[in-house]
Length: 217
Ligand code: GRF
Image 1 (cartoon, helix red, strand yellow):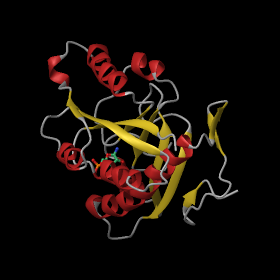
Image 2 (cartoon, protein in one colour):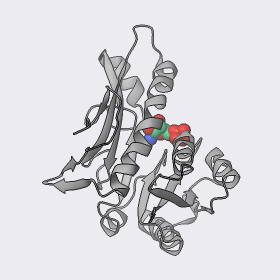
Image 3 (cartoon, helix red, strand yellow):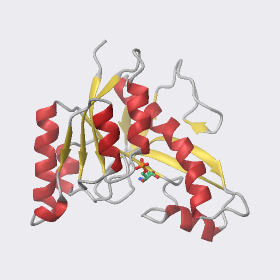
């Protein structure tokens, strides 16, 4: 099987990275992680990569004069690794338009809300403050604007009356760990077509849970 090569960009804990590592460990999963890049040298996620025997690189953003030169360094690591798809997994830097266009339709992100609601770093707090009964997570193709771009997979997650940010974040995180591998699989199997800035997904013979969209076709 020809597996899609992916590079994962992280800044911290790396639980979504772990979910992707676990998915890629299945012999029939159509993707493999060839590189993990962190902008923070002490990111916990780097340990998950090392344990799994995956190459890592640290590109510390403070060492670059501007966003694009930082992005160009990441780009050169990705190119040398042979990565074909870039997965942002808790990567806390906004990528430059240069990078996003250089990798057009080949960068994906996971965000802990049902986009386009609650963009930004405090998505859980925004959901609680808004009093929504359902929130969730979104995997989407990255565009230069923050938390924007064609939506690949979403999962709905209930917000409970006594939730604080941590309780809601933990419930949504579980859904994230299902959605991200599913989105990578859909891309790796060439099931996604971007049409007029929306993603059309062929879900034939793909199993997905009841609160995960798109649904099987
Ligand atoms: C996740 O909630 C993700 O949606 C957001 O940042 C968090 C990263 O968590 N973009 P982890 O590092 O994958 O554990």
